[in-house]
Image 1 (cartoon, rainbow, N blue to C red):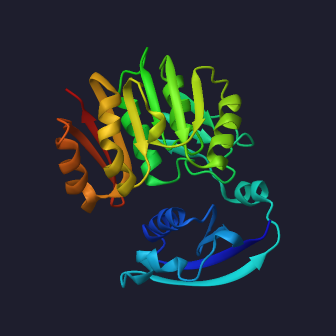
Image 2: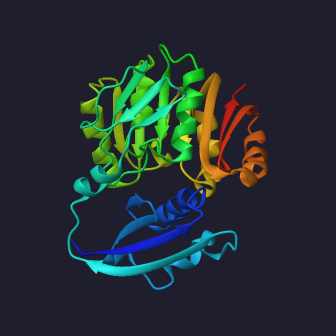
Length: 276
């Protein structure tokens, strides 16, 4: 399989690097390796098209200096690449998200993740904030949906915190397969994994729905999520910027969802809604 690599030099690094990775992910780039100057992003050659960077809006932002070089590569040892750059993540001194080769910590909760080419190690603001939201919830005995599960990290954390039943869904085959690997690493027994989108949510009911995707998909699927929530259910949404909140909130209010709280991190946000 032939890949193209784009090596981006970014200044200042934050929050530009995180925004850049998110936008590249939406455009079809599959894997990212951060370094001291920025990030290298990989995409399958067959998925590439001229003008693929036109939708990467941060490249047009005068607040940041971003340059890049492109090259074609025949093969990448993905595990070796991310192992060189994946450091443990700590959330509120309570949660540790680490790789199998990292030392065990003394945190209350510990999640082991091999992200391979999937999104959701905890490095990105949206995953980090979703973990923060889940820390505040009573999860024991709950039925949970992790929509756009990526590595499965939020489904795993839901089981660790006591959820009795979890569905994890992602449209991407890499994420679907990677979630199984990570469930095994964490000895999870209560998570069912599916490949697909919101069309799978027929006659499903949950107490907590986690959707960490992107603004447009969320706007399209909020109605479906609401229909799947039990009375007094909780909907956690992330994957969008602070300036997107009015759009998200307007759509949520159509279905009597009540905004409960917002966490903000480097202009990314995660919102908690309560259902009637």
